[in-house]
Length: 314
Image 1 (cartoon, one colour):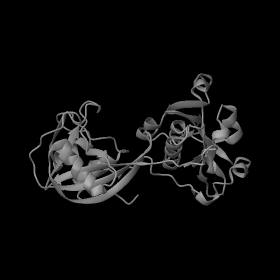
Image 2 (cartoon, rainbow, N blue to C red; image 1 turned 30 degrees about the vertical axis):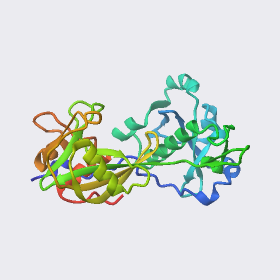
Image 3 (cartoon, one colour; image 1 turned 180 degrees about the vertical axis):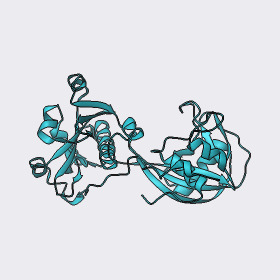
């Protein structure tokens, strides 16, 4: 089957983070905030603020970001650039957004649109994804779950400390397996009611406590489509900051083919041939069916199957 129309392998969204995380230096917050080369991205919930320059830019000088309403007292250090200059994520209160919306030198948009439309370079997209995930964690971790006291920010935003009971709270990442089940020249795709019209994708689900990734794949496929699977192997992963997950891309070998869907999870699931899946990737399917957009890991799993090779190393 010819796959030349697919072109070069696209970038996997949110994986371009290239800063030195400098985890051993997170106690130097004050010095980093005074660094003359410090820059920050501004995030208000799901809204990203970007500067309109020769190209869209997610980074502002720290004093400019603070002038727009960025909270430096809640700054989260994302890492250090190659020249040692710190990069922060600053939370922006939603009340500040109306004052920024009509500015010709700014653009306000959401992270998913930035990724789908490739509006910023991969390194800035990865930086924004990390910032969004971290600030979402801070927004949900205001009070100590042990004693109820209001928490203080520590370790440049990578910890919250309780001044009352001494408990330390750290950000978490929720693992999600996303798997393409294959049987010879066929692959299994499902459709959620939340999907855009005509879109079909790989099955996915959260990993449960005490469960391996492989066991989670087999359980989720069995629960959602009643398909038994055998061999499972890892292909790729993708940070997914909605709010803060990691998508673990796997391929699983089907042992059975009869599908019975869990109607609480899916509105449909069926087998697609390799050739049919290829037309969904190129959006030339005669029935108008499509695969997920190229920035999504599901696209990469399906394309790996279509082309008979693993995705490029991340």
